Image 1 (cartoon, rainbow, N blue to C red):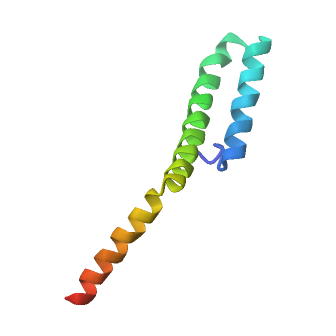
Image 2: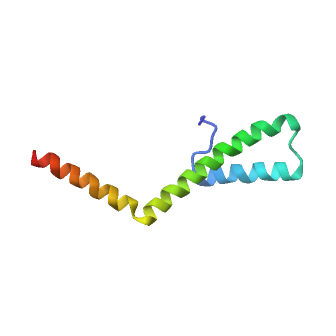
Image 3: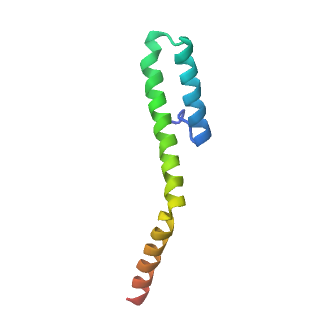
Length: 79
């Protein structure tokens, strides 16, 4: 992602909302549609990634990962 891409979920969501409004209103010039869709795809991917990360934490995956890391550290200490 480039420096102009959104960096937070809220920014990415705002980007999606802006693009959707522009496309729904017919304000987008035909030459601008493809770049808008590419920008929307990047923002969507960012939103989706953040949501999936939160779901993983809520599902307890973070606990399993930290336990695995602790086990690895214990094994290293034992050596």
